[in-house]
Image 1 (cartoon, rainbow, N blue to C red):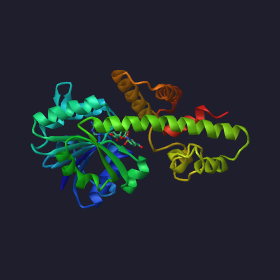
Image 2 (cartoon, rainbow, N blue to C red; image 1 turned 60 degrees about the horizontal axis):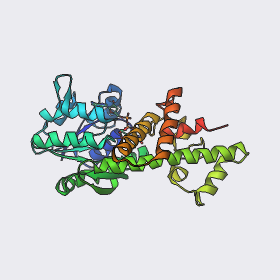
Image 3 (cartoon, protein in one colour; image 1 turned 120 degrees about the horizontal axis):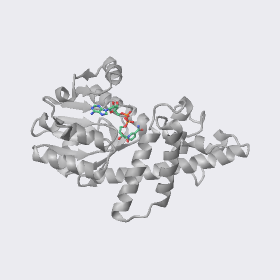
Length: 296
Ligand code: NAD
């Protein structure tokens, strides 16, 4: 299949590489020349622009930071036309960025008017899942478009869920990430308390992992340096899922909660904590670095 892949960041780079390794004809592009060079060296074919990447593409995958990037890419900005003007009619767009459901719906509507299919397919599983090809996809869109996307998604992920119509994937994703943001703070608090009492963070983490406090952070993504060798915490919080991206997702959750009059007090508190952590200059560090705010 001819696939255009836009956005070669922490997640998009390894995802595009998995499509390439699976034998798809991938044309990739990122605004960062460093990212293009890095993945070009690993075998990806790099296009000169997003417009060039989508020429002749049957499927377009995007993995960008936030709503404004996705809207600007497909719909255009400042009088410049968007990618929809360059993608072939009949093509399918898979946007895997985590963005507002309303933004997905806006792009999907414009794509449909231009004769293209669109699904929102945000992911969970972190950079480890992106590299291993074991991501979980949460899809919003028609069953027909999902079945067209399935052979592509299967090369990047191990679980594919159909959450509902366009936008539903994004809603599932912000529910998940609100929980993740809260549980990382809770896990950090518990470890910080134990360490303040002289406990070994490795021993304490293992006790909690096998007890009723067990969770994903304790399994795979411990926020304390040195507990998990491959977690961002053990690499000075480099790579992984940026604090500012978590802040964006918690903001999306709060906006959504206001719109539907849901009560999400812990999500709100977690958002405030990550916002203070970002203001302290930690926005580019992995979100598990929030433990620094809680250590004695
Ligand atoms: P990132 O910042 O590492 O990568 C985003 C890339 O998009 C950058 O390389 C940037 O140069 C590029 N970009 C921005 N605008 C562009 C444009 N118009 N054209 C081409 N390239 C453009 O972010 P990431 O960590 O890869 O995350 C991407 C998305 O996935 C975000 O929405 C994030 O919330 C979500 N997500 C991230 C993780 C994670 O663990 N990092 C996990 C799940 C979901």
